[in-house]
Length: 321
Image (cartoon, rainbow, N blue to C red; front, side, top):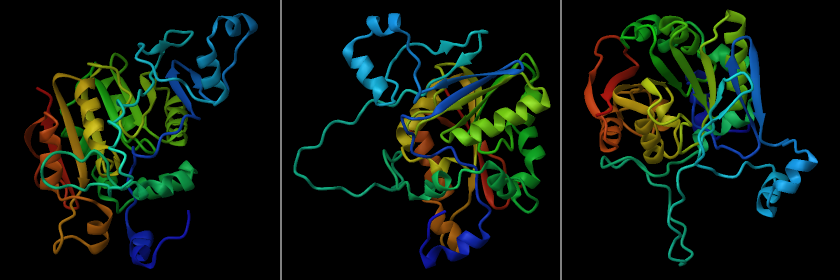
């Protein structure tokens, strides 16, 4: 990872690094889906075209492919050769252009009224710089990290049952993904959602080794989780919501993905000035109550907080009306 300011030294040495679903998405990348014992993957930066296909493509599409990008589309998710679904995260609609005065406005932070449209993304730089999933596994999946130590209790509190469709959003190294897949069983489905392709590849390898056939890998963007509308019963975000750089749009995408009555569970650090460790207050952009207001403003109904289970993290439950 690159050099960090001296003010971050304590955090760099001691913070229990968190799973992340929030990195700047790029046009170049891969997306894979685990179907049975095979991986089907779609390469965005190495499109393969035969002559017949090229003759049928317009100049705009060809230009986009040369640049290594998949053009934005509202088409349904495509299917793999064996019927597995490959889910693409379509970006949210672009903001209106500015008034041309040339002034650069600072990124907004949580104000207690609604979710910000954009927040500082420097929190995610290290995940783009350090791409070895084994290194992150050593940080995420270790004794002493609260959500690792209490992972069984967290999963038990979700009220899962066989056949459910669940999204592990900001899946990171898959701390919860495989356990969720085991609970919902072969008739259920678990979507591992992350912006970083190396995390998804790592989860896919773990799922294949474990013989789990109900895990799908979803490449997200900063403003969209990449899940199909009405596709899931429950979303879990563990120590990842504070990494989302475009919270308002991202929450809209989660609301669309959840079926009516579906649940959104947020587990994240408690960062309160004067109560929490200084590095946490600097690392996490808002307090639990501010995060709650953001999520409620996106149209979710607050169900309650799971008190007593965790000390370093809050555990909120929301419902999609």
